[in-house]
Image 1 (cartoon, one colour):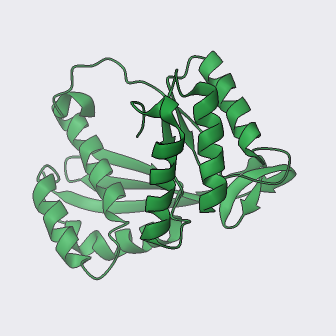
Image 2: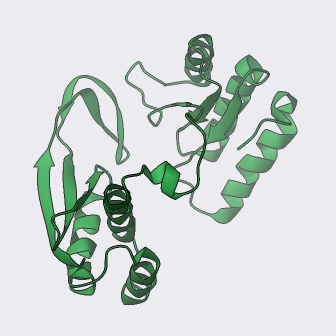
Length: 226
């Protein structure tokens, strides 16, 4: 069995009441955002297909997948590790963002070949995984526009049964510390809490400052941090 074709299907889709703020998707009443997406299909000489559907970093992913096609055609799709290592070397001057879609599509293809889920191929025995609630980045449009708004939303998610909550904040260290403190004080006893600044901080030192302040100022989460 050999890889015979890579196909990219590009499209756009609509998100109602969503706009952008500082380059991130954010709540925006009355707005409609039309971001790009794509589906990668990897086909084999035996007719098997593996798929990946992507919504983030679409232009660079597509560019790198096209660049990588020469490394894939004619290869055994089950030799994922060899393919991964070769792609890592081929993209050594790039950010490797296109490797994930290829690897996931190959795992999907392998699952169909063996008649097993990817979870089974990875040796998993669990029938479910815990879910967590996540947020958009903060906005000033009546959505998550203050630490209190984040705390209210976290409490609502706790009431709905979510065991964990991920914060995408303002991208400003001091404001994010305030958000973390407010959320921890409200739900820190009942939820695992996470912070994802989405690459917004300017320096590593800022990142450390946020983490250390959260540890120092939020004792309720002393055993519940990710």
